[in-house]
Figure (cartoon, rainbow, N blue to C red):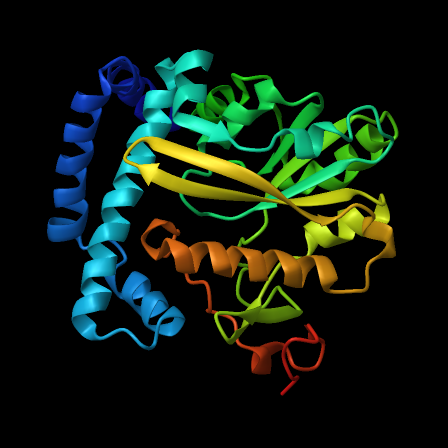
Length: 304
C-alpha cells in the first residue's frame, strides 16, 4: 500500500516541482481553501496554541492569525515539493544568509558546530545553506513511517550535500564524526516530546513547556560551538537567515543555559512573525504535574 501511494503520487509531485512559482502558488491557494474552509485542519489545536501564546489577542485577531498561519503552512508545503526541481542558483536566490562567515570561521576546528533552529518560516529550505559552508553537514531528522516518502524527503533535503541522520542514530553519528573534526550538525530543536516521555521543562511563552535537550547535551559533551539560526520571511517565496552565537564552548556552560537561550531566541523570533510558526502541533500537551516526581526544571521556572 505504501508503494502504491508513493508511485501514484510521485508523478504529480514531479510535475508541480517543474511549474513556475506563479502557478505553484495558485495551487497553494487552492490547497489553503480546502485545508482551512473545508477540512478545518487542526483548527482547535492551532487556535488553542495561539491563545496560550498571545493571551492579549481577541477572538478576531486569533482568527486572522490562524488564517495567515494556514496560508503560510500551505505555501511551505508546496515550496518543499517545488524544491525537487529547483537548482542551487534558484534556491540561493530565494533563501539567503546574512552572515555565514560566523560559522565558517570555525572551519578546520576540532569543535563541532551545533546549529539549533525551530519550525519557523522556512525550515525546509535551510538545506540551501550547506553549499555556503566549509563543513561536512549533517541534519538530524525524524524518519517518516512510509519508507518510500521518507526516501523522497531524504533526496530533497540532501540534494545540496547535507547528510541526514535519523534521530535514534544521532548520538552515535555525532560521536564518530566529532572525532574527525570540521563537522556541522543541524537540528530542529523545538520538537514537542510525546506525552509522558519528557522530564525536562523550560519557560516558553510564559508557560512551563516540555522540551528535548539533545542540542544542549551534544554541545556540552563535545564542547561544541552552538549557534541559533534565525529565519525571517521577507515575502512569499523569499527568506533570509542569520546565525547567532549561543556559545563557543558548550562544555563550559551551566546546565540549562543552551536550552534556555535557544527557546528565548526562538520566542523572540516567533513574536516578530507569529503567523509563520508551526502552531499545528500540541506544543503544551504535557504539564509539569504529570512528571513532577522525575521532572528537571529550568531555573527560569519554579517547580510545582
